Image (cartoon, rainbow, N blue to C red; front, top):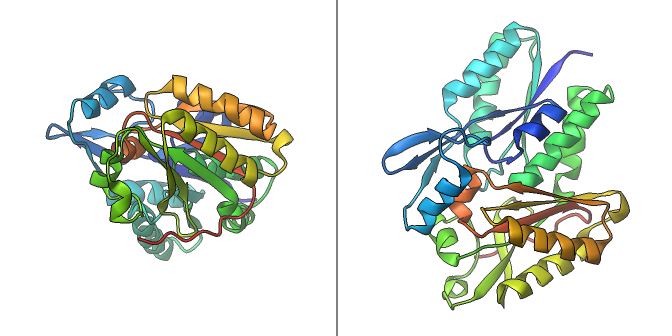
Length: 296
């Protein structure tokens, strides 16, 4: 079987320990704060997660960029020249233009190197939802499955990854434009928390709003208890934007409600974080296929 590398991008939120354990690489996006551009590192080399989210708490706006074209060109070309294929599972195309750009670059590289194989998959998700798919790919590679077998599995099962989230403040989502909901939804009533899923086309969709952080966590746990399948064999992943205490509290609820095998917590990286803001908590499990299509 021809060797292939597995790539995500800065929205997959997998830390170095997980990436190393699964042999996952990633393409870096960038973010801009106070006029300075930073690489969107999942290991927080320049700004710490606390510094990043404190800047948002102080009212500073952070903008983001997609993966640079030259990054795709460099990696895809190097792999082709070294006889290695690439499986790239990228951020939902409803949230970033990166995956569509990657497909264009991959086509050009494969035309120059006809023996190369570069497969680019739209995860229809981000954060640990995208990360779960990358771990699937790694497990399949370890089991001796080909790049096409791994890609087919991800494409057939990606809508079985269930996301359910809430945010600290609605303002960040509204400014970023990364959520589908009616304008009435954004009446910023103090203490109102949206319950957000990833829908069939990979956009973030607010399915309801509740009063208070504890009620939001209860709603998330109830939603995932309905979605999850084979819970006793599953790890539920929870990403948070500099709020490990809330993530841990949600984890306890999810463990009690679902009977899952384990809970794993991790930090939301700078790209997703710039859109959702501090205080966000997002849960991910695998279960029933997502069928909801959000409407504005």
